[in-house]
Image (cartoon, rainbow, N blue to C red; front, side, top):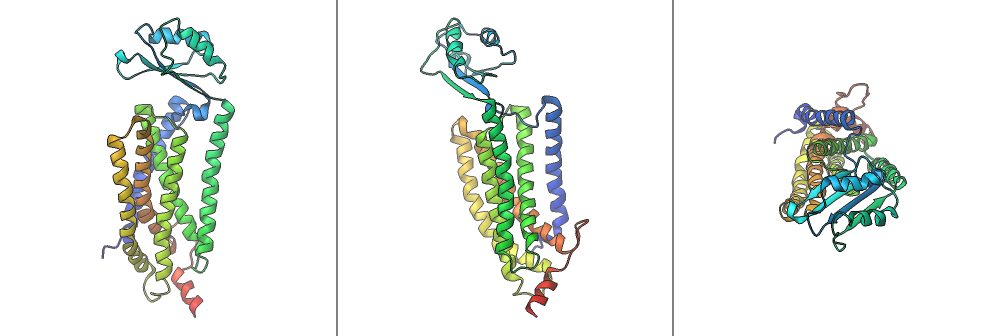
Length: 319
């Protein structure tokens, strides 16, 4: 039986080789653009307009002049589809819905606007700030709830809090990886963080913690059964006893997401791509980060952290 936890240092190095460049990319993005990610109007506030004209009378310069006249000098204009479609996406720093009708009237002077295809979305700056605070609060509360649940569920296991901390560490591993990827794609492809991205992150958190708890629960069951064996051996056996279940569950989700990426609509591909990367990371971290970290803690390999052997405490508890 291949000893997974014995190779834990290699897994820690592999995680560092992925996460550290992601952090560097976020720092570079912050220096070059002012933010670690490209943020959508869900966070910044503002308005986004999707326009379709009946002819080629509307040009990028003409659209820019219209929006500049309303006080936005930093409007972002992109052409959608083929030039013959006469479709444009315009993002502006307007927070008032009443401005939309005035802009629509001015755009009509450039070319006839197809009002059936016109779409405008406006988010106030206050709502954007509330979304940001709610996102951070959701992750923080989720971490506390997860730790509390594991400590209570594993209360009969020596040093139960270690399991909670290791599960949270694996969760943070996945969040950092997803954020690093999103920062990179924001620089390369212009992908923006929106409410769907938060949904993907919270889904990844749930899957990651669930996988970690499955392995931890088997470790909890095996400790009293194999008191004479080294802790590392018990943990490695527990991984192999649960790995098939974890992989089977994740593979089903992966196949569905790959199908959506290949054949789904453009509006959901960014969400599915981030979800796919996050779940892939969650599958890895629950087996190759959370559990090896638990063993490293037991073996006294973590700096500045004391230890008392789990097997020693289990033996004393049953004595």
